[in-house]
Length: 329
Image 1 (tube, rainbow, N blue to C red):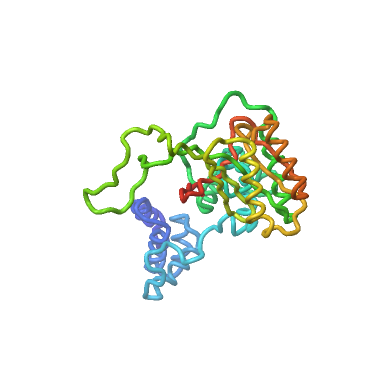
Image 2: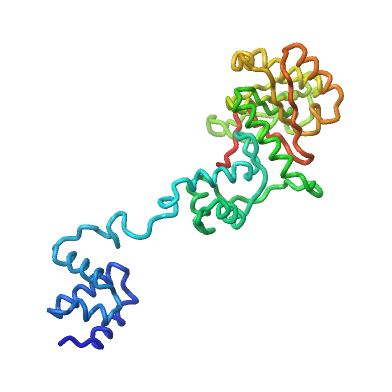
């Protein structure tokens, strides 16, 4: 007769050093050694289910290691949340589409949300998830935890998020209808000449390219003002380089040249143009010349121009089209 107490004592001595498979095989070996009724006895002594012990016996009697260094066969264990809820990744991306800051490849990504808020929002849609599940999904979707960035400029308007949601909805509606939607902005003014720039290039050893020691403007060359026009749906950019001043006339002329060179051919049936811009500079919300020149452009092209300005302290984030890039996702 098998001594239950003795079996339990042996199991307790080694259980802390065994993984799931090791415990299963230990119990199976004890049951085989105990003979008839060994499975039930070992199950009582160890607390391991009879079905688990029987699987271990089959593994031992097979005489070969079919699963290698794995604990379970492929596909074993609890299914993931995505397996039970296939629409979960799409629902999460829909929630964070306008919740991640600064990605110029989408109509709007700004409002920050925590994992707790995302879990609460998914729960309201009927999904059963935890913060760990959401964190793993975000990692699978190529989002990462990143350092903070200076973005706060004074107190936020109570309708700040609603403003971004409105702009996002306006741009999405235009793209869905096949109408052009662009984001415009003036980039940093650049000195023209042999000045030092960050970065490296391949040259022979100990032969760096000589540049000026001080970044003083060269009078005969001056500065240039790059004005970017980013076609959101086509994911294409256009940059006009001004050599005198960054004015509203120059801003609208850049849009005009983009339209005649690229936009008109790309959107032959366009009836309106949606423009997103920050609220300062040459395309500022209070610049009368900007409004007048846009009206002239609308009269000239027959387009209904809809301008949406981002709230103060934010930027349209037109990327640098000289070849520089940024990576967030």
